[in-house]
Length: 185
Image (tube, rainbow, N blue to C red):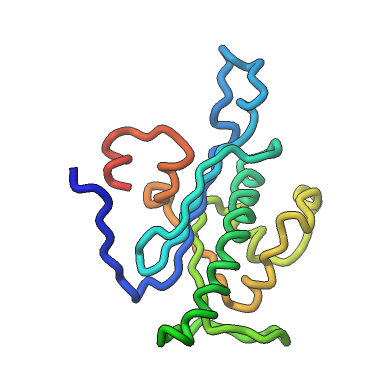
């Protein structure tokens, strides 16, 4: 075993990978276990390709769909990602870190930073809900509890990207994987 080997690649900047397994612990043989109806979520925040913070846990409320479980995970990840971005912004001036992304769009009247992040999500419904700032009849119950991060997306500080589920490294945190997939990720 080699252990954890980190090879920083500063061209990657800040990345966040998010995933959820909708009620993945539910088992018809043990359907009386109340924890089996909660979705499992995981996310990892990386800087320069190196993991900084990772989380794997059950969600604290029942999601009604795969999209909702993924969106809850995305919202929870953003609660750690946004302060991390602020920290990087604050220390970058003292550590001479250059952080200018050509994609930054300053649409906000608030003071902004040059720090951006790429967030990767494999659920198209959660992607659309995060990017399109409107409520829909079928998702209005999610409301502001999980929409808190939309201004960071709108202002161009967080770029949310689709990722193929086979490349979603946070699958390690949310479900049992075949050996080959586990080693690959």
